[in-house]
Amino acid sequence: MGTSLKIFLINHDDTIQAFPRARYERLLRGDPGERVPEFAGQRIRCAVVVVEMGHHRPIAISRIVYSFLRFDASGRIDIEERERETRMALEVAPPAGPQKRSGPVIDARHLFAKRRYEHEFRWHPTAEIKAAIVDHIFGREITPV
Image (cartoon, rainbow, N blue to C red; front, top):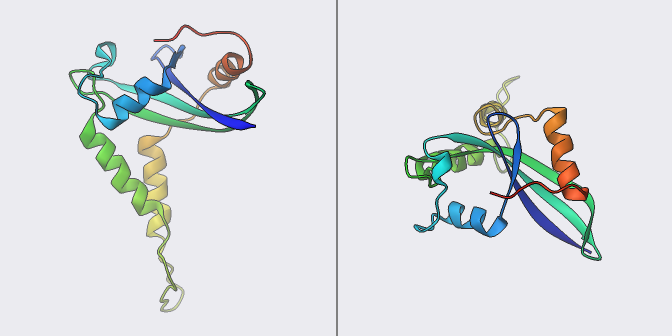
């Protein structure tokens, strides 16, 4: 048993497109030869799905992360936006070590950071989008980009 990573891009009309993992990874690495001109200047919804595999077949979905990909004018991943997301993600972690407390005051900055992070960098799918992703993984094919 192993895992597989499936990537889907969700268009503005809620249709989904399977996106090759290798191409996705090249985009995230900032490979100068990799770009998606049809998404230039746009913020596109993305679903990254972790699929449990058994005998080369999907048996369960472990996790789905619904995020955004912002593309620059040339169709590459917007590096500044990715860096901002990374910085904000680090703020989400609760403070390490014992907390000094003076009275009833609690350090909740990480909780507010998490709310802001979720609002800016995550989205919630409709039931139809969830169903389309599940259908693709366990059956019907979707045309890749």
